[in-house]
Image (cartoon, rainbow, N blue to C red; front, side, top):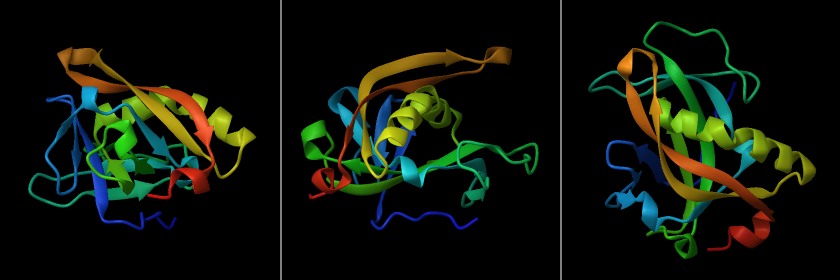
Length: 167
């Protein structure tokens, strides 16, 4: 499967230990300063990722977005890739299209928690962007005592892509 690539050089990453967003080339932004993000549901890829220490991440995308193919190995984690649109009016320090791609469990769980609502809305208006409200954080406990911090996302509304991406 051909992986979708964002047309910009911006990348975002959720940093659960500091409850903040890392944006390429910028200082981390605390979750309370960002109010929303726009996501393009048509760009979702799901699959498996691995990020070896000191190495570059590697991904194996499933043929059908939202599904998972066979796990390539024990060290591989659930992963996703999604194009997001950042706007200063929503509290981001930069504006533009960015790629959120990661095998981090906190990010995957955060998107998974809101995706049914995004998918349901997107089926009603093909080509629209989903506005996700950033509601704060939520602690998540796993078996064996591990934990992480999720970003709490909530589906807000659909926005015409043309209206939302003119920066």
